[in-house]
Length: 246
Image 1: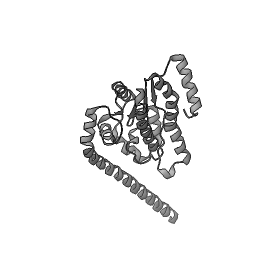
Image 2: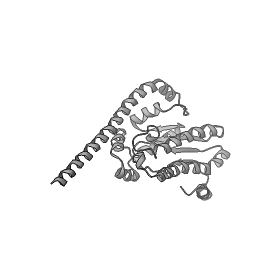
Image 3: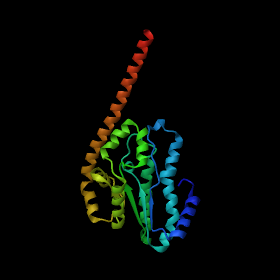
Image 4: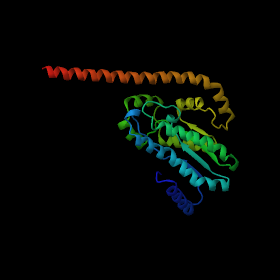
């Protein structure tokens, strides 16, 4: 998926010739690196953008002209809860997921005349092999904050998104926290459901207050972990000095 547009276009064309036209594209390629900003290699930012964002742009470009011609199809983008609420350690990852939301919003408007639907999935932590690998290097702060949203199975996430695709809904969220975050961050995103739109208008202010509580809690985790590391470093320095004196 990072081989460039021509590679992706060729693969998709081969698939279409063998299996028929592509009716649904779900842009799910991606991975995450987590560390404080100053500890991440600059190349990680470029790699994250290539895999998480540009691969979706290239894949979408590879199928969209045919969908427009046939006036049918659906294109989904797998963003993340971190693409709605950026937290400690995600300075390389979160911007790529925010970018998918902006791309999807634009594409939704452009494809309306062609009856091609667009949707965005905002999964929280999902119990995949990739997530298990991420846990091995996840900073303490990130791990503590992400635990607040719980852990979902891939099956539950997939079924929820497929249902929203069938119903023509734009955004898919998971769990109570995900639903609140979806209402809060709806902003200028498309909304087909009148009920959802009214809910967003009525509850956005309340959920903003709740989110500020979460934000304060997360900021407290950051400060607490920082103070603990300082104390540990000071304790280690004093221990080393004591050994030298002995």
